[in-house]
Length: 190
Ligand code: ZN
Image (cartoon, rainbow, N blue to C red; front, side, top):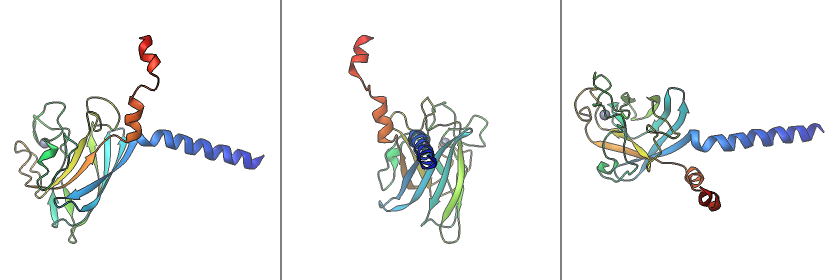
C-alpha cells in the first residue's frame, strides 16, 4: 500500500516536471569564432524576465559585453548572421540611454584572471514563453559575447567590439511539435 503511494507520488512529480520543463528552461551551447564550444548559458523563466546562468572560458580577463540578438544563427567567424540586438519595442541602444534600451541589452560580464566567467544575469521583460518579447518565437534569437565592454550609450551597440562567442536560443523541438495541429479534423470544423 505504502509502496503504491510512493510510486504514485513519484509518477506525479516526474509527470509535472516533464510537462513544465521544455517551455520554461533551456541550455544553450556557446561557441567561439572557430566553432569550439566554450561554455553554456542556462536560461530559465523568471517573474522579471529570463535568468541567464552563464559559464564560459577562454576569454581575455576583464569586462565583456553580452547581448541577445534578433536571429538564431551563429555563423563564424564574425557572427554577423545573428543580426542586430533584440529590439521588439523599437528603442535605442544602451542600458544608460534615456531612449533605451534594446530588450537584448544586458549588463557587462567580467572574466577572471583565468579567462573564465561564472555569472548569473537577468534579461528583463523577455520570456521563453509566447508573445512579442519571446526569445524563441519566429525562429529564435541568440546570445552573443563581445571582445569589449558595452559603454551603455553609443549607437548602435555600445562600442562593444567584435562578436567573439555566440549561442543560438531556439524553441525545443517538443514545443515546435506542440504548435502544429494535433488533429487535422479540428481545423476543418472551423
Ligand atoms: Zn543594444
